[in-house]
Every structure is written in structure tokens, then in C-alpha cells.
Amino acid sequence: MKRIVTATVRNQSGVLNRITGVMSRRQFNIESISVGHMESSNESRMTFVVHVDNLQQIEQLIKQLHKQIDVLKVSDITDEAMIARELALIKVATVQATRAEIYSLIEPFRASVIDVGKDSIIVQVTGTQDKVEALIELLRPYGLKEIARTGVTAFTRSTKKQEKQQMMIIH
Amino acid sequence: MKRIVTATVRNQSGVLNRITGVMSRRQFNIESISVGHMESSNESRMTFVVHVDNLQQIEQLIKQLHKQIDVLKVSDITDEAMIARELALIKVATVQATRAEIYSLIEPFRASVIDVGKDSIIVQVTGTQDKVEALIELLRPYGLKEIARTGVTAFTRSTKKQEKQQMMIIH
Image (cartoon, rainbow over all chains, first blue to last red):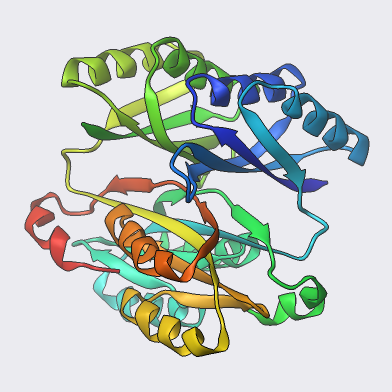
């Protein structure tokens, strides 16, 4: 099962290495990691997506991470009401005949073309993992030259009663 | 100076730990890291932003990373014609009087409100680091409750002659 875990860490040399060390020793399958500064510049916020066999595994991982120096807070937010988004840049092969087709294809995804080359364009899309993957699959037949994904970043919603609305918000 | 480095790695347990180990031993100051799957599901693409004192340091880092098992390719793309984007989710405190104000403020950034709570909203913005930071500064006076940033993801442009146009593309 896929779990989304967020961690707040102090910006100290080695903290990221200790965290990846814990996951590597326990052979965790990490799908994505993203790390960025927080509002306080002394702290960073990490979001990682891991695959585990059962909930005990993720509980153990969180316990282990909590023990690390400079790790301030770790939570598995998968089952909470939360917002998870990622950004992908997709370089797609184009010829004159397919360009307009691709433009109309990406429009419902609120994706945008941020660079146009002679034989390729770069599409930028933001959304849930499912949305990003759906767009990648749609563009695959045209020829994917390169994909860069940031990995998911996530946090819990403002109001906890909104689980049911989660599916309705698409961008 | 700030450098943007991309790496292609095999999805093997421990590769991320070896990479962060190299940076930690050499006390590199990592600003952000993002790791996501590539078009081939056996490889991942990492983008990291590091601060170094001189170019020699970054050359050494790249050499060291190249020596690691399962690291396929490492490049410093800072000086190339490239596209670098990140995604930020910003939870801002709101009261009824400021809500409309915040909406009009974020509009030129092509940012969108993806969640509305009783006393806060969540703003999603995609763009260059400068753009994301400019919006964060604009929203700061209203009260920042939480920020989650993915870190930069980047790749080189399709056509290499476009350096001059880079400044004109804002979203």
C-alpha cells in the first residue's frame, strides 16, 4: 500500500542522509521525495511516498525517524483529509500535424506549454498523482522525450470535515 | 553561488542514501531536493539545488556522485538554457475582509485556491523559485500558517538558442 508521510526537519547537515539511511536499511521502496524550505528558514519540510506491505511497517518507520537527530515531527497523513499535489514537466515530440492536437488534449488538464522547440514542446502540469499520470499516458503515443516530476508535496486540509469534497476539486 | 544539478539514477534500494551521504560528508548546503519517477519506471530523476563557494566544489561533487553505484548521469545545468519550476502550497490565514483581497493578489501569479477553510485558504502556485518566493512574501502579512514546497525540478530546453527568451516566459 502507498503511504504519504510528511516530516519537519532542522536544516542541519546530514539530516537528510540519516533519514534516507533509515529507509535504505529497512529496504523501503520510496516512490518520491520532495524537500523544500518552510516559512521559517531554519526548517525544511519533506514529503515522501513509500510503498509498504502493512501498517505496522509504516509505524515502525515513523518511530525510527522520530529518533533521528534534527527530525522534529513525522506524520503519516494518508488517511487524513489532505491535499497532495505534484508538478511534472513533460517533453513531448511534436510535428506540425500533431501540435494543435496536443494543445487541445492538455487543455482540460489545465496544463500549459512552457517551451516550444522545433520538434518538441514542454508541457507543465500540476495536480494529484493520478491526474499527472493520466496526462502522461495520454501524451505517450506522441513520443515522450523526457519527464521531470517533483514528487508529491502534501498537507492536511484546513477543515477536517471536507473529506467528501476532496474528489470534486480537480485542479 | 546556487547551482542546479540533475541526476538520473536506477531505482535501487540505497541509491538515494549514497547520494545524500556524499553531500553530507562534504557538508554541502542543500536547498532543495526532488525525486520522481521517469518515463522508464526503473529510473528516477533527481533535481537538487545546492549552495557552493566556487565551481571547483560543484565539479568535485559531480565527480563523486558519478562514482556511486546506480547513478547513471549527473549534470550541472545551471548555465544551460533550461526550465526550472517548483510547486508550492501555501496555507494563508483569512478573515472575511481579506479574502477577496488575497484572491485578487494571487491572480497575476496564475495561482489558484485549492481549499477554503473557515479561517484559512490553501493557495497553489507553480513557477520559478523567484516567482514562488515573491508570492510568499506578498502573502506573509496576512499570516502564513503552513508552506509545503516541492523543490525545483528542471531540464534543458528543446532549442539551445532560446536563452534570451527565458525571462519572458512567466508561468
